[in-house]
Every structure is written in structure tokens, then in C-alpha cells.
Length: 70
Image (cartoon, rainbow, N blue to C red; front, side, top):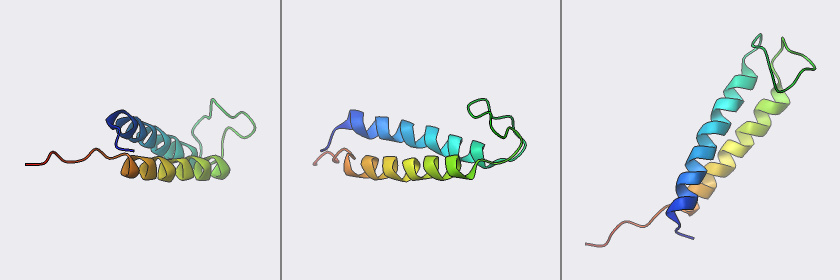
């Protein structure tokens, strides 16, 4: 599976999930997506987005385009 579109898509997803994981780790930041505890860190969400970050990096590694042969 050496598709450049999948590779770059996985990189974009990795960046977004990393940002969301960091966002949910910061306590005291208003969480617009989850209204149950707007003042605390949401560890479950941060772990979920961290796992999605790792999975998207693995997909990007598998879908990495080949180097051009000289």
C-alpha cells in the first residue's frame, strides 16, 4: 500500500489528533466538545486521541511512498 494520498492524509490526521490530545490534557481550558466537567482535564479523551495519533503514524509508515530509483 504505497499510496501518497493515504500517507499525507494519515500525517494530517496525526497532527490533528496530537493537537486534540494535548488540548484535552490541559486543565482549566474550556472544553466546547464535552460539557460534563469544563474545568478539569479529560484523561479518557486525551488517551483516545493519543492512541489515534499512534495508529495514524503507523498507517503513515505503512503507506510511505517509495523513493525514486536512480
